[in-house]
Length: 604
Image (cartoon, rainbow, N blue to C red):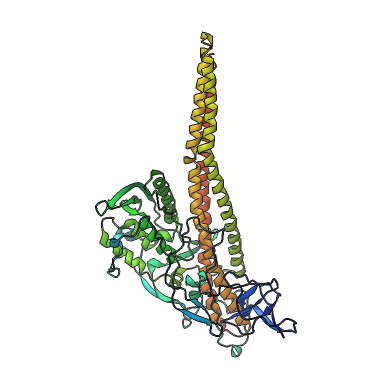
């Protein structure tokens, strides 16, 4: 008899080896034995893979076909591999991480010999290592003084004095021995659990794919109550309820930072050259100089520390032509956009590593290394990061599970469409700019050359009464030649700025699939815990703890979504106004050239 199961809920696959289910769908099982809370089978569309055992109900019915072999036809023979990036969300500047030795694998199915390597704890980011701004030995000395008192904070005392950081320190834990706050005795959805005598010690299953962002970010460990650590007052990340829903608490001391004067500098007696940028933060007024590798290091730390915050991508690296004027100018503009988004984010702007980057004197190598080492030893990453998030409490502050899921799904569809449209607009703008620089200039100057040839032909007449006409036609030729130059120069005034903005937002859009995946993973754990409560397999208190921790991730995700929409409206409003204003000025210049040529004929 073939084993079959009926899907009790919809399930959307998000990792390699998983298959999607539709409610009431009948599936064929490879085996009734679950694998860490997962079953393997074939859905009605012929897809074979894994799905949560708690999402289906096993049924036994006669079937003609023999049982399916227990293996994954849609997985590599060597085990799990990360899902290839979507063509929609893949950033243009993404680079392949450096190869590293794989850790020792552990057996997934001892009888079948399947293995896959354990994913390293923490974020998956690796700082880009290319020929552009390579790391120096003096930047990575083996000794560390990160644990010295005031190693990180001492480099920006003015910011702390202004109220940027507090020194309080307290321990938080999500482990099961902590008492959980009561919320009326019911989970969202108004569950009515069976009597406590029927309960067992059922646990919410872990994700089988240990490469998933939900696992690597620490989201799974946090939701399952395994996070424990000390949180300083300065590390608290507060989410508040605003007019648009959950929002990050605004930075009480906002600031900006300019990036100017990129200059070529040398070291090792001229053997190594690099470009240094002058940064002037408004809250200190003290200028510092940073190289691209400093930006690259900072990006790596922040991308690892904040799994549900979109850290803007840096401008792309370049192996050759690093010291060409056009490339340096383009990079400076890209870094200026990056810096604006960093300073505008209520969380990123107050991060210790970012403040160290902005305020540590360029000439104080010891202070820089102290702050750098301390940032690299930050314990508030992975699962511990979520401990620092403080969310609204009290009446009206709870989140509805279905509403959150609906909002996240809508945002996911929005980002997908926005990414497609930004790619299209970027391609169109780039093609149009290329035409202006080459074809349009050439065509207008061709017209001007033709008018010039005509005036030269008229000059052969050598009649006094035709001199004015000849001069007017020659002036018209010069006007069209000048209009061609205006077309060639115009993209630098308007289209280039639009494309710089699009590049920045393509980086943001590439971040959100992982952010959404973390939130979706948390929601899946809540649904699983609710089913265990309904089936009498889990105590209500444990399920409530899972939902409370999921709510923290949901609050943070919705706050980040609202912040993205806020800066998106601000940026695109400003940039479109700039673009149209430059277009108006451009056509006014063209009109002035034509009007001047027109007036030349008045005296003929």
